[in-house]
Figure 1 (cartoon, rainbow, N blue to C red):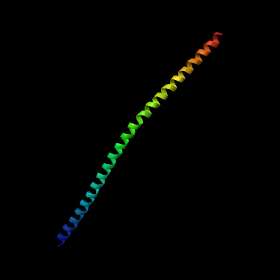
Figure 2: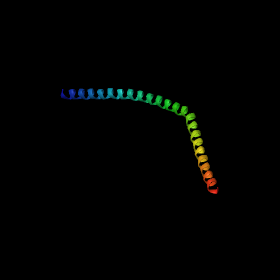
Figure 3: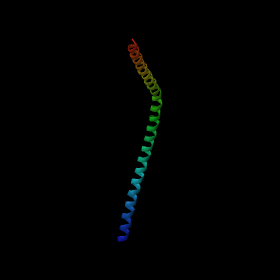
Figure 4: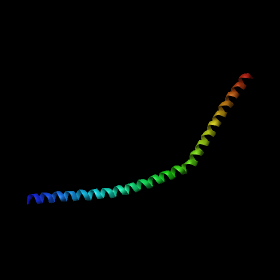
Length: 84
């Protein structure tokens, strides 16, 4: 009799663990789908940022060119003033 109750308690615990495992599998499937959608959105955002990145690179290059021209102009002006 005591063995029967003990086996019944073990079976109840195993059933509880099985239920929790099933719940965990459902949660994992939902998280996997959420991750898949997140990765898709991230990829789309990265693609939409490419034109902006090109624009920023062009502006950066233009500003460096303006700085270089300003420095050269200052040097030439200084030489011009020294030779006067």
